[in-house]
Image (cartoon, rainbow, N blue to C red; front, top):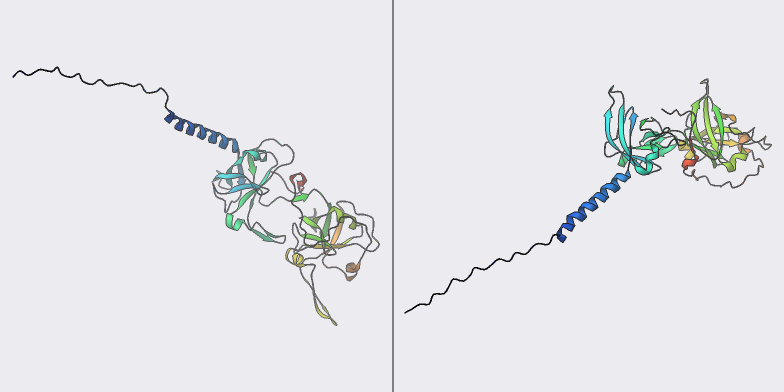
Length: 320
């Protein structure tokens, strides 16, 4: 039986397809790289200058947690804390945000804000939870760039741009402090700015500012007295008597003033008056007819926040 022989079949040939030169799968990492670069650039644009602030003590401050604020706005953060080579001070290295770069100039002041209870009231209670922070106050004028500062141990005295200043002198002070109110007939007419010893150290000078609408009430013969605390007196007929200007004056201290029925000439700004410890009975009955305008009859009105354009530092503050 003859078998027919079939030639072997040819092996299949592989078909080679050339891959496209560009694949859309590479768009994902490319787009990610572009987005990352944009984010980095934006973050770099937010960075401002690095400054160093020297304090005697920084209890409560922590690197990468403590912030710097101005008018309640976060304008920087603490990056590192270290002792000076002589171990006598502490240097705080902080970075400002870009929009607050103008704080890094000559004349700017930095101080630590902690909770405080004093004659002027209760302040910065939020720091009990959030911790202390550094407050900033820009220097006046353009100023030259600066990146090293001496931190203030106390907040600088801030003066109101509006109002008339006067100086009251007393042998000693018991309950007054910065921001203590000044009253006329129980209405808040101004506030205490700061206290200082006289040049010969024999008296205390109380610097007050009276609101513009109340300034006409201050005359050359105006009388001022301490309205803080509670006045306790005993009368044979009426018995024990307790009097106080108001609750705020009891807590924070305060000053009252009165002008006689026959007022003198208007007092010039910066005029000096004696500050009496207690009022005489006749002072409380004085009722001069002095025209004034826009006097708000409110005993609870607090001063409006001070704008930077209306802020100056008191002469006694020295800049390092």
